[in-house]
Image (cartoon, rainbow, N blue to C red; front, side, top):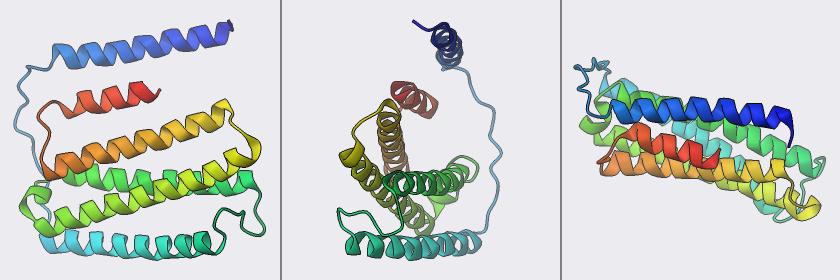
Length: 193
């Protein structure tokens, strides 16, 4: 075994164990009244609509490129650059979407109050899921040509983790969650670590 890997494992274990212990010990702690930001329903609807329209335009361009080159590498790309571009597009866009969604869910009450906002957030999650599958497609083209490596497997697991997290968010938006959100996210993150 490599000394560097042992140190990395020990540090990761200590951090994850302390987070889990903190969550477990404080599960019965009463949270003081959370201050929610008051946002105008119309402004949030307009901003989410603009984001969704931009997303639709981006997905149309991606799908048109995908259908013209189905199961083939587009011209002027290598397999690695095509997969890398798809992954980093996904990473950037889903990070922005995740921040917007988490802010609206946890810092405002607008998702529970407005069905328009709820539907726009669900469509944003749907578009993110389509982008995740696009990244899967690019990655599997790369894997079919060059085979599996640890890094490629980590990318596939990261994409699966994002799918599960967006699935949890969909459940939270539609039905709510009966147990602590932090524990669910913790289990997902550590399970795919």
